[in-house]
Image (cartoon, rainbow, N blue to C red; front, side, top):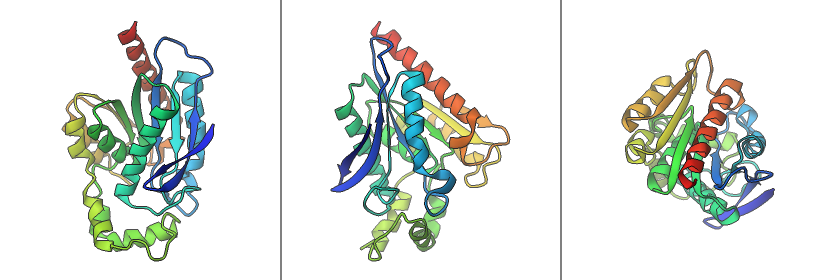
Length: 256
């Protein structure tokens, strides 16, 4: 089901997938957060493939799954900011809870969305677990060159308003406010699955190891020979789906 919801008065596009039938007495819910676009129009990192992933999660795993586009991406209004994207994710969590009955909510994030998922999960104690794929441990690289990021975001179409941001200092300072390695400490001991490509050319695999170490009990899976864009790697998606099955079975055992 295609729909829309608003965060900060900004309308975001979304796709909510429901299982054809509830295969048990409990209903888990999943919010899927995308990454930063790799090229204009999204390219290989396009959000256009995420509704299909939500449908697969609903059909094969029996979850209610919500995929959405953050502000400045695809058909969503607004312009990119890191804290804005974090608020969008929190808004998506609230929208899922309003739109589908869920006995528990989990988060799945890719790239930037993975780091935001850890941050959002740490801030919301009701989140049962997080799966983060190819996440950066922090955004220090962006923070060191915020004007370069601003230019890139304009080129990618994630910032469309020529007058945005009104306060560049505040916009750039937000790049230091999200730190997945610190958030992982607060997320613990709740579930954390980290998936990373051994040959990731964008985010070093050391970032995943740092987040795993900070959490203390994370399940870290390194995909041999894989690069950054694991959304399209069937090995990575198989790990995600297997994890979701285990989480659902655990939920069912709790309510049995």
